[in-house]
Length: 465
Image (cartoon, rainbow, N blue to C red):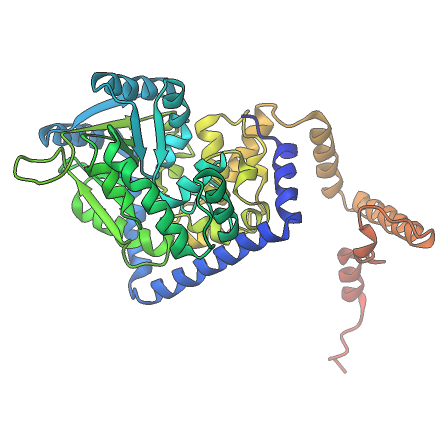
């Protein structure tokens, strides 16, 4: 996928012009901001916790190799099988080999952005397997043939009425559009699929190195069914999603749900340490943990290493004016919003996502709201510099920016430019010319700020008699 400014604007304009869609984003994000603010008011030491989490994540990423080795040792000691995947092909081969060993044909999945990142569903389906997403939001967009529009709420762009129509078309059940009814239909449909599944695949919110455990944070029971009913559980984990100790994991979890959905703790926070023991009534016979790199190790030790500290809470999306206007699909990536504008070019190539670093006002709201205080505006500026240095900026734009740079550095040229601009506006007004609604903008001032300031300095101080 190649995403330049033209591709981004095309989808963004479609969202802006669709009142229903833009309204859905605005309403959901406003509700998210309100819930988060209320949740944080009940945490008296939230700023100290954020500072502590920042230190934890920075130290962990800086020593990632050491912590990953400890995680692998302890996970294996607990009975899990740990695999390393460099990229998409490695991951696909590992999963398909596990499926082949068990003659598996049916797969249920819990929500996982990292598997969206490598298009795992497509690889499995091309191999003849049936893959069913079981998170309600992911299930909806799978039926619709769409991709996630938000890293936490993948079907945020769908209204209840649209989901009801979708269920009638794809499942054959026409029901009313109340959320409880739609949830019940999905539950009834998925329950038998859970029972028949050969393999369950999940993501990992975080791994804990000192015990080799993985933690899944969900608000639906599908996550536990996915990881406990099938005989084989495959967990796919980005290598950066690691906490060295349970004490440090506790700080992570104390902020994740609050910044994500405004909850003190998600409904289901599941800890999995190896396969089921002989004394346990349920759980998988095998647990496979796949540690996925997919260019993450290339980011360590660079000016962008800070991006790997992200805990995927989605808070930055709810305050970003560009995301609220454009919607998630404009980013053409599993990761949208400010974090997506940074991480997508880093993981998938700046040459392929050169439009995203410019999809930002650099207002700084994402930095203010981030629980880890990740400086996304700084990295967006750095990516823009990289675009110029790598020759990724189109020639017309380069010429225009170089011309503007010289003009802005010279007061005389600034005066000439604004004079011409005012003259042009007067001509358009005189002849009633309308061009892209420019007539709605105010007229260029007769005198620039510099000229007005200079005139003020020359006036006598009236306060002195």
